[in-house]
Length: 618
Image (cartoon, rainbow, N blue to C red; front, side, top):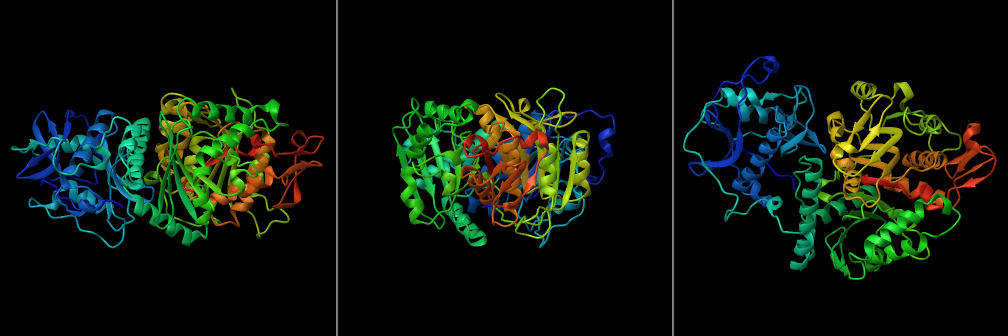
């Protein structure tokens, strides 16, 4: 449920909203501490400066109560965000924008810049600029009135408020008392701080409480890692189940959500089915001493290039299936589920889920698969992307990294009108290679038109430590993970970002969070990325099949599934200098350096299991 907003301002100070040129003037900046205070029993977000206390927002709305928030609890939460952004240097300007297609009031580093952190979310029918004007402008008048709600959003350019000017020029008020976070009122869900998630799950009995605890804990983990507010959504189990049911109707694909939470003594599983039923199971055999060892062995066996003619991965694969899937198998089948969305805990976020095996089939042969950081951090709005323009960019040569010889063919294959396909014509869009693959050109192309799909055929690496250690390689620079949001992927919105040559540090918590949180951190709806570096031929095979299936199936995860099935069953292969597959009836001719002299298949999961749908599978 999106939290509704009706707030009032204390200020009656004349403030020129449209003027951002003041940022170039010489002036002294106020030092400020933000807190939630009360004056005449009304909670307010307040900035305490050397001049005195400056109320910013007065929280008088009762709309928050429906989502479990009182005005006071919301005041406390948003005031903490003001302080966090002020401390880390990003509270330079306050503006509006879209995050996961929801209008928000947010902070920006400079006029014209995108959202670098969310302060609070608005309703779709709110006019963001009107909200901002009424929050900070004198035209609200001294008595202040509730923010009105427009029927449609205004498409004018966003307003940018210089927070330094605001704190310097706005009158101070007396008689404000700070509110303690310890209050008999209901505090925001996110403020709950149990010592560990495992302890919380041991205390709660219901599946509903378990899901709430998992969502809150993991959302906090991701926000701490990326140092940003990533979501203002707070759906409970019933709303999650309703969303799944709605998506099943829209897409014809019936999804279920599986939470898998490793704890010291057991693996906790929670299954949320469309329509309302929730099932909780625990697996004591999968504990701290066994689970990490098996997941490590599983990935090592699949990625060992010397074992591509063996099935050495099967033993750990079947063991993980027994622990993660088998306890829920009967319920999945009874409810005719065909799509599984996994929300995984530490040490499970980087396992190749598609290659889990039940002794007869791989998991991907039975279900479309997606990986999310948390349901409340996932964009669940369904939109058909079959006719979306594609911006395809990449590099085949690098100064300090291995070449990617197949990239020119990969980019061309996306745009090529291949014979024998099941639809007329090719994907429309643009492609850029090597010297044209720059951040500046990416920005310029996205500014010139909306590309619903962005394909980057290049090296990307998710490393241990802070997000700034992980990167996507461009021709002339690296785009680090902590800078992803600055590219404003959600303005205009990108439905699918494809990274075709990623590598993730297996078993490392930070690297796993960077990988699994890639979509929500960047503001992209969905990311398709690989867990390890796959061969040029394998990547080309999967990407060619994926893009062709994407034109004829209802959801993105199903397109990936069909491409992976074609590879694991040997239907996609290199033969007589051509790439052949179910969607390539006439075959695609390859350059001599890729074609090779002998027939080659891609049955081993090394070639196909690395590719993972992150974020929305729809």
